[in-house]
Structure formats: structure tokens, C-alpha cells
Length: 154
Image 1 (cartoon, rainbow, N blue to C red):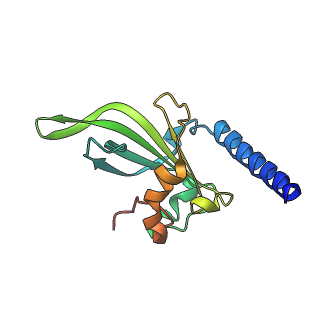
Image 2 (cartoon, rainbow, N blue to C red):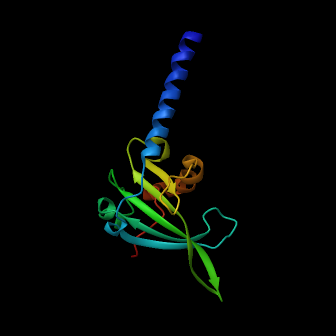
Image 3 (cartoon, helix red, strand yellow):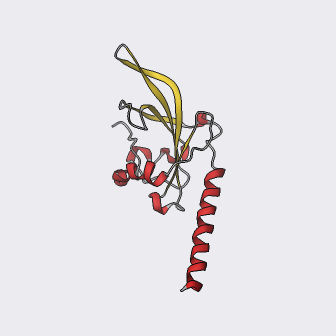
């Protein structure tokens, strides 16, 4: 049993290290001006980790699939900009930038519906998140839309 357990444990550790290394190399797209704005939403609950005003942008790779809510092709990227929501006499306005959200369609990520999820600081630094728990579990009910909340206006 020990002979089998050691190689299996080593394989798990090597796989985890490779996944973490790939995530560490992940960066925000260099030019968000090349992305199209596809929607916005407000999460008004200040207790929510997602509190704020969200603006979502999509790369050209995913634009053809967007009107049909997917399925999205490999390489599709959604980037969200999340701002504090400042209540100014009943009107919510963007406050300071809180973080970026990131989804990239990747067939290598079967554990998260074929999407690589990440979050970045306003300065573009990768944030340490449990993406399965903090991202994918929330997106899972959107399976019929390829795990994407944003929808084209009809």
C-alpha cells in the first residue's frame, strides 16, 4: 500500500504545484480597450464580498456566442471591473476601484465548468482566492448559459 500511496501523493502535489504555477503566471489583458462592454450590475449588500458596481467586458473571441448565452469558444475572456457603490442622496455612483474579476474559457478546467476564474487587485496583482468556492459555486446555477451571468439584451 505504501508503494502506491507515495507515487499518488507525489502526483497530487506535482499537479497542485503546476496549477498554482499556472495561476501565478496569469495576468490581466494588456489592453481592455480591445474588449466590449457587455453589461453592468449592482450588488447593494455591503456585507457581500461582491458589494459594488460591476462592469463586464468581453473579448472578440466570445462575442459571436454572447447573444445566444454560449456556448463560448476556447479563449473567451470576460473581465469585470468592480467599484465601491457610493450612495449620493439615493443615487449609486462608482467609488474607488475594488478589484477585477476574470473568467477565461479553458478546456483544461473541467472542475470549474471549463472556465479559469481569477481576481486581481486594482493594480493588477493576482489575488489569492479559492476559485472553486468563491467563484464557480456561485456560477454553477448558470450552467445552461455556459456558467455566465451576463446576458445580451433582447
